[in-house]
Length: 217
Image 1 (tube, rainbow, N blue to C red):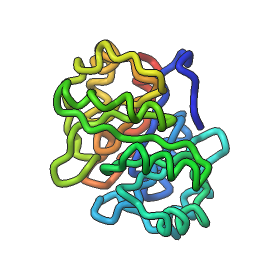
Image 2: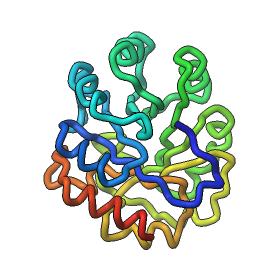
Image 3: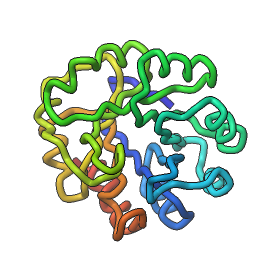
């Protein structure tokens, strides 16, 4: 579900949803994308059967993004047979060639996550811009590749003018949205742990507050 760089309002993606109540809260509050995590080590991992059930609640105007970490074709095929994803998010160390391969085989837009710790991490962005539909800039993970609630220095992206639509992730919460959007100009903000009451447990009130704050910023 790609959007033009000419979009006026910052979009919102609520990632790591695992049950209907928080999913419904995200949809009703106006989320543009919802994210389902297909990575077993994550506390937000969902089995294919659960993802299929959750997808039945999602209207056509909300993008369904599946997060994968170095997935093989068999696993992608299994998920896509049952879950109507509108975008594949690659959050591992997939090469540009692998991004291209997945796009061509599965005929869906692909978003590639770029882990950021310092300005040097932007050196290879152009190689991913050439093959991905979206980019997502996230803090470099420690135990997990994402969803750690850790922010990086957003000023690294202050002058970023890529050719692709992109999302900002990593440590974004309802309290620092205004700062994030003063420093950077992403097409969308992606949040997971920033709207949780405990690790892997989404808080519907925080979801609503986050989306409202983005729409008002």
